Image 1 (tube, rainbow, N blue to C red):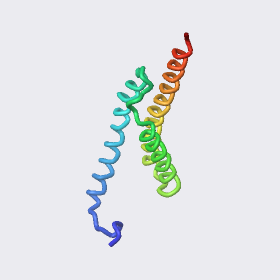
Image 2 (image 1 turned 120 degrees about the vertical axis):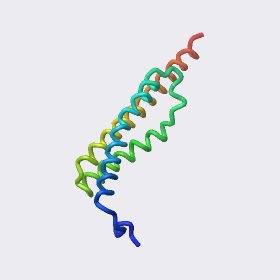
Image 3 (image 1 turned 90 degrees about the vertical axis):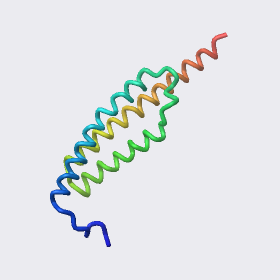
Image 4 (image 1 turned 45 degrees about the vertical axis):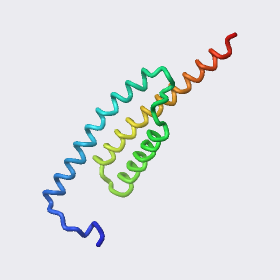
Amino acid sequence: MPLSHIPIDSAWLGAIAWLYLLTNATRVVTYLPQIFVVWRCTDGARSVSVLTWGSWVVSQATAMLYGILVLGDLPFVAISLINFLGCGCVTVIALRRRAQWKRTRDLAGAVP
């Protein structure tokens, strides 16, 4: 039986929609500590998985396209955009820190 045919009370659907909105809205706050830690990182952000954060960027970009083209749901698109920006910030800052760390390491090695 396809999942779309499972009968769900409209009160449950409303509760699930609000829960989705609430949990994803609070995710915005959870990006901030990670952004601050990566920003202050002095070891090239080695403990941050750029592959993982980058995959989340791609996932949120896909979610935005899905929300725009398939669902036509502005709140869904807005949540996906916010999560895209949060994941993107962490990814870009980590990549920047790695490049800075590599330059510093290379310069230190070049000095006699």
